[in-house]
Length: 200
Image (cartoon, rainbow, N blue to C red; front, side):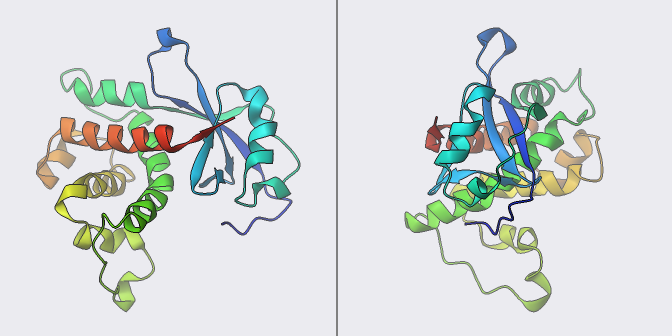
């Protein structure tokens, strides 16, 4: 699935999807900074860092070539906090980094989700990208995403915007949809990840 070199680094990543009081912690491993591990077409997740070794052994994406396991959590993607920030416009005017981090993670998984949907025949055939668009898929995706999968358009548009500006409200004024629509899009995709995953 990936071209992996044995000397690449693995990173231990935590996904906070539930409130802190739930005491539910979800982890995964990343190859470098943009390649989550998989078994077949399923993301691999686990509930405690001690299961990282087993997750690596179960992976079929090339990660098992890497023998050195991370000793600590490198990054926390706090989806619960990002949703709180979006749902409270009076309290939160800027992203504070949480929202962008979560959009980055969803972006890492998005193309796999798109591929799964195409194979389920729930997707239209995309047009052949023009030469100037072939370098960045994100630049032409919004042109062919069908209406029923409009959440992808929202994720990519928000990702592009918050890479350069942390102010929340101008983005929604520009794209014509609201905070709650982005929350729904993000919840759909993180839900797809956690329900499609293999747990070890």
